[in-house]
Image (cartoon, rainbow, N blue to C red; front, side, top):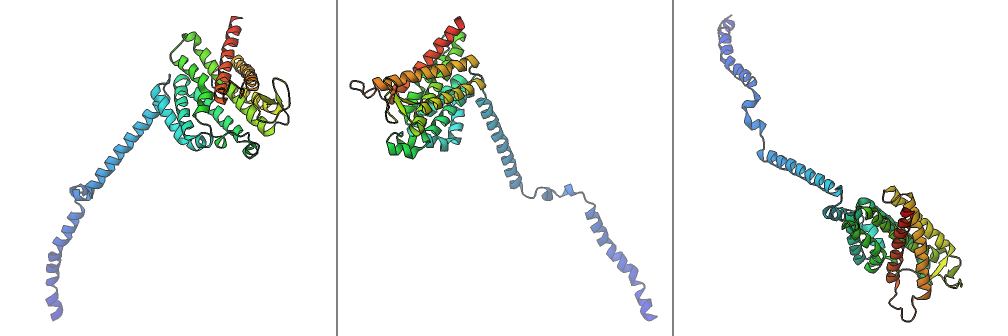
Length: 322
């Protein structure tokens, strides 16, 4: 009894003493979270860096969008041509190195920029197709060609002279188109001549390289005398057929990209075959002869592709008149 009598009065006192502590905790739990700003901004520098990164991402997207718009410029501009070639040559450098020397790549870059400015992506694709097929044909049976002494120098990697010799006529057509020579009526004509020049050169390259690799019998076009593979002015049935197919394929690419129509494609193929026969005549009768030492392969290439372009233009004009 004594124990309980002494303890009972103290219990309410203890409860009254503890009540403020409970109310303090309750009030704290009910306090809104936004009254503790240090909890919502734990690290201001982190938020600053995040904001800067977001702004940089937006800026990068803006640059990419502007670059895409520039590449897609219609009609093409020098800026779009330059940017497009920088991107393509950077991504395609492994393939370029396999087919061109470093100086040859520089010459090809100038050609690509000029082509894009004149004829846009369709013209560039045509030249790229020519390069891929021509390089592949040059690499066919390279070891055999080297053993026979008829392979291209530097494992088939072409230098600037070869690039210029293969594209001189096309560059002239590009300049004529850019400067609007002849007006609107001649715009399509220059593009036809451009396609014809590369059809001519591809046909020449493929016929020569496949003929040196697979030609069973090689004839000199002036006398039909059987001569060794790789002889200047010599032709073979295998090489001639391969060259014809190559010119048809490239003309078809030009047709698909809207550069030429079906009659124009046929003109390019026919002009290419006539020009290549003329080149064989020059090679057999003049090249490497006394007094014509200056008539090397690059010069003959210029004559060949120029003849192909001129023939295409003349044939087109005759068809239009008739």
